[in-house]
Structure formats: structure tokens, C-alpha cells
Length: 217
Image (cartoon, rainbow, N blue to C red):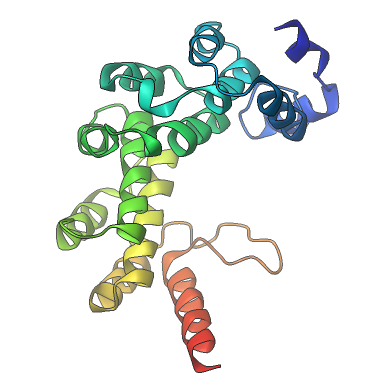
């Protein structure tokens, strides 16, 4: 903890806090520290228990993802209240866990929108990488009915899922674009030059154009 405190940079904290992350540790330095510590499951558990954001980020880098029980991961996702901790927990720990699919199904139906958003984030991963057995039509039905009024984080992940269904699955593309156009979610999202808009119809069209361009060369 003392070592993490020494890595604190007020300027980094200021930037992070604008994105809802309450820590000021340079992530490159945090990764270097994790590399030095290597995998230490008990240390990871202790770091997580502190409740400190920088400590929890470090925990996700030094833990052994497969060592966590299902209920432990469920508790952790409910405790992870800042965006970066949630992202790292999902990407570095939950996605590598044998419990990921069971948790995806349970979380997607959770009344807490932040927990539900974790379920949808795992669903996006499956849409893109392992769609066999997923009910894509059913997912589109839920997105069509619920995305417009969903809280921010949940809406973001549902939109992500909508775009990926449209990009990866040509047979559902027209419907995915249609849903995006009707709901207009993230239509006016400020997008930096050179970046693709998260508005699903624009995003889908751009990614498909790139794929077809790549295939043509």
C-alpha cells in the first residue's frame, strides 16, 4: 500500500476522476509493479479487501483468475464501483474463469444495472468470439425493448452488443441497424476525429466497410 501511495500523481488523479476513477497511479507503473510481484493469489485477495481502487487494479493483475469461486467473483463485481476496476476485473479475471458463462447468464438478469452491464459485457465477448448457442434474435428483442431507457453503463454495453451482432452476423445486420436508427442511442455522442462513432448504424457500416475493403485487397 505504501508503494502504491508513492506512485500517486495528483495530475493523473485529476484526469481519472473526470472518468469516475478515484486513483492517481500511472497504469504503466502499476503494470511494472505487477510484473515484479508476479502471481500471488493471497496478496491479490488482501489488496482487493482494502477497497482501495489502485490496490484493486493491482489485485486483478497479480491474481490467479481460476482460483476464484463463482460466489467470490459475484461479490467482487458488486463491490467494483469504478469503471476501470470493473473493466479490469471483467477482462483480466472473470473472462478467464471457468464460471464466466454461468455468471454472464446470472448477471444479465440482475436488477442492479452495473451488475447487469457486466453480464452484457460478457455477452458482447460471446457474440464476437463464440456465438454458438446464443439466441441472437432474443438478444435483439431485449435490446429493442430496454436499451432506450437503460441507465448509462448498461445502455453502453447493450449498444455494444447491438453493434457487434450487426458487425459479426450478416443475417441480423439489417435488423440491428434498424433498431439503432429507431432508438437513436448515442447518436450525438461526441467522437474525436479519426474515431468511429459508437452510434450502432454508423459503427456497423464502418466496420463492415473495413472488413470488405480488407477482403478485397
